[in-house]
Amino acid sequence: MAEVTNAVKSPQSLTLHERRMKAVPKAPYNITQVYVESAQGATVYDIDGNRYIDFAGGIGIQNVGHCHPKVVRAVQEQAAKSIHTCFHVAPYESYIELAERLNEITPGSFEKKTMFLNSGAEAVENAVKIARKYTGKPGVISFDRGYHGRTLLTMSLTSKVKPYKHGFGPFANSTYKMPYPYYYRAPENMDPDSYDDFLLSRFEDFFVADASPDEIGAVIMEPVQGEGGFIVPSKKFVQGVKRICEQHDILFIADEIQTGFGRTGLLFGMNHFDVAPDLLTMSKSLAAGMPLSAVTGRAAIMDTPDAGQLGGTFAGSPMACAASLAVLDVIEEEEIVKKAQNVGKQLMAAFHHLQNKYELIGDVRGLGAMCAMELVEDRNTKEPAAAKTAEIVKYCWQHGLFALSAGMYSNVLRFLPPLIISDDELNEGISILESAFESVTK
Image (cartoon, rainbow, N blue to C red; front, side, top):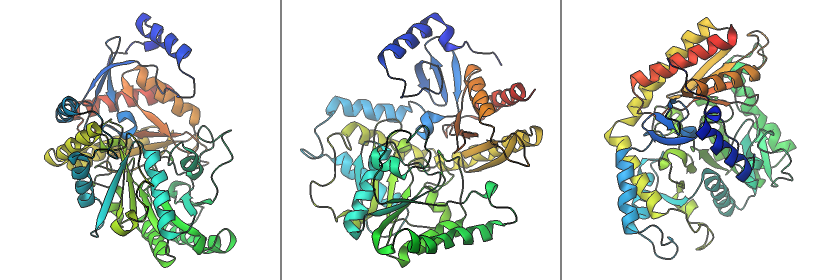
């Protein structure tokens, strides 16, 4: 394994980095100091010619891989026909066809309708708007460690203060947080089943102490918490939350923005829990990097807002819809869901091997190819090892691997490689990761 050049130290990258620092504010943070020239499949090349294995996937966007030929061709063909007419002015078939396909493949056998937007945060905002309009109830419950976006409302639904919320208040009213299971850090002497019962019982106290059920219009949940550290709940917990929603006429919104389109080893994360949400938000891998998000839900709920109350100038652009239709074809034709299962098995096996070798790794968890390792200073105290996590992320990109951190305490290594990644690329990335642990722990 050859060490790649630190991009910022090379003349070409250094010049570009200096331009970035002068022209762009610091808030849009860069995880790496790698300036990309091109990307294909699960491989990225920087402007200095260095090659990187991508275990980040644009934060979960590249499930079918960078620049998949079918997606590129679809975008090119659409660009030659029309780039933008605005669906609200002059609609087009690709928007309708994509809505039909998402209505068909998302969880739930009931009649559905779909609308499109530009980003995951916009999808969440609009799902909440729809829920409030339908129920006539303003309150929204999200979960500890949940992440739903950076806009005012979605930031209000998000848990982590730094960097996402610090200094940006006051936040949106009528938003509340409930505990989400974190089995690795559950109270001592509490087995998972009892832990689920305890967390679900907290709803009873909430409805007395914080807000009455007749004030709560929706509960929003990630099937697997993404930014929160790839925390996987039990089927009992998810079904328990859905049951509480049904008892109190509260809509259940599934945030599938990071878990969707095969990432968890099934087409959608909620498929693992046998729960059909009332509303479902999607983005990221929906269009392989083109800006597109969606809200799909029960037809009667989706039809509650009046004409003109939902939408956006660029929402569901012809090029993004063309890309997404190609993505859905690739998922089916190339059996992406099966590939996700295989990638997940290989990653989890490698991570358990590393856990047996390095005391730094306290927990290994995941669902499908959405895999993570939680790093701790001490396995008994479980003190988060945030600094070492940051060291490993930096070592990885300096040696040819893109990796990401996550978690409330920034001590989780999370991995979202393109699902089309080859075994050779996967093994090469794992080898770099092991070298990173060796370097940090020696």
